[in-house]
Length: 294
Image (cartoon, rainbow, N blue to C red; front, side, top):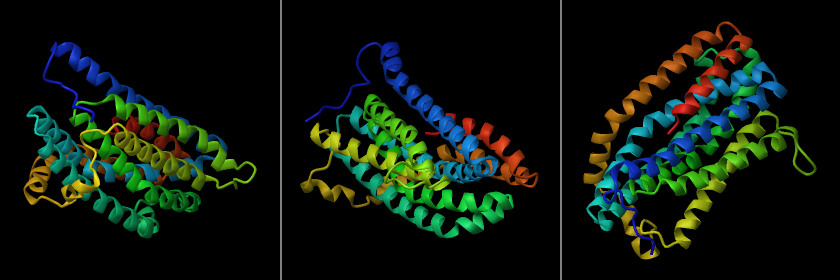
């Protein structure tokens, strides 16, 4: 069984740099990925399509920010348990957090898919972008469970002292997303041209493959945080742990909630000036959101 990585031994400076660099690299990859996807959409599908992705990404960032604090709290509690060499407690935290993220991600996906139209209307999305936006947003909301759980597993591993494994599988997700974007947008052979929905579909498949591969890797490595069939009881929600996650997580997540809410308000105002202006604003906004994405 793979042992926990130690962040409590050795030179502090070297340990911090070794641990932090993969996290920085992951954020850079996400930023590059978002920029490349915007290029495909904006250059080949037009400004109205780019406006659609900008409106959707603002909402998605708000939703991610809403649960970001719980993910950070999970990282802290797992780190505390691992530092105390209490693997049982670490698994209890992971199990409770996983159940929380699964339930929340499914609820968000269903709500977002159904309410895509009203949300875009409330944001005053330009009329020529609405069709693009609905098609893109609905597929993105189908991808939300994979996006949320990918982030959750990655943050849990970082709490256990492992920042390299999330980087490796983030690289897989980015490579797949970049490769599948033109394929799904324009179509090739048996793959039909799906337009802007194809761009969202690439994100869905990339995150699903990355998450599945990471879980299979942890199972194959017999990672100490992998749950065997005999340990499925860890997924029962522990109210004490859940309370600690909320108490610690909500204040930490408020900064991202405020930032993302302000982005939604801003793009709603910009939408009044038409899709060309919104597309320009969205291009800059996307780079910012990708850079701070957890």
